[in-house]
Image (tube, rainbow, N blue to C red; front, side, top):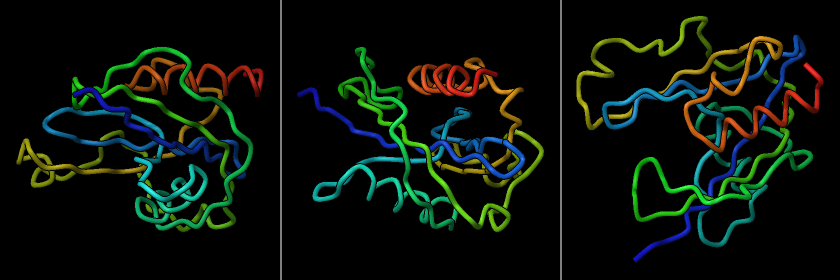
Length: 154
């Protein structure tokens, strides 16, 4: 039975106009995506995103304006029976300096990626003028980044 999987992601820019991205190791593959995650029963999309940011980054965020909601069919990269609906919001935090980040994409130690069933995540800041659709691994993130670039005319 096919299901809808609703995902909520945040666009966080710091004071240097850099975008926070998440480099993830999931089931033996590497992905660069935006921070966020799955909507749980009983929560709204903004509440979901605030929760996901705390869980993933430790940052409290204020969820701002809506950027994009999926407007095309997209099957899940992780479960070929799920259709993905992704919702993107701008988010703001006064504590951007408190998140552990790396300058190196996929900055994992060998033990973190030895088990192909494991997951690992690291964060990095990317200058908005250097990010583009090809920087992202997932198709809907690519659309969101294109819209972000249009918004900032970069």
